[in-house]
Length: 83
Picture 1 (cartoon, helix red, strand yellow):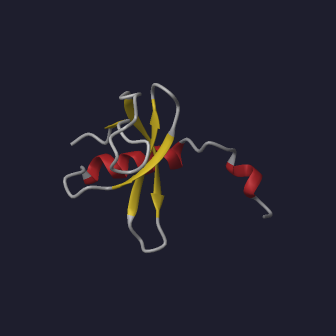
Picture 2 (tube, rainbow, N blue to C red):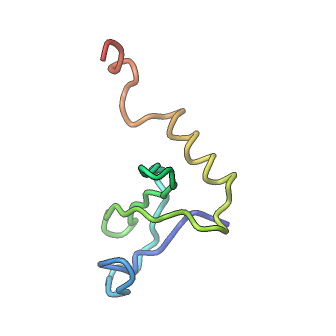
């Protein structure tokens, strides 16, 4: 199953967002309790939002997203040396 979503909520569950644009999966968050969440960016308005992974989300797609982030980090890893 794909990891894309749709921008339908202003607040979780309210279904009031007028945007309705696709939400692209751009990252993974691991919460304090160990639960994974997908970070989505709205392709229409740019809103960032996290959503818990669902039972039917593809483990392969989740792992591919996490590995993509490791392979192409948003910042230079060399800058972390000496920190």
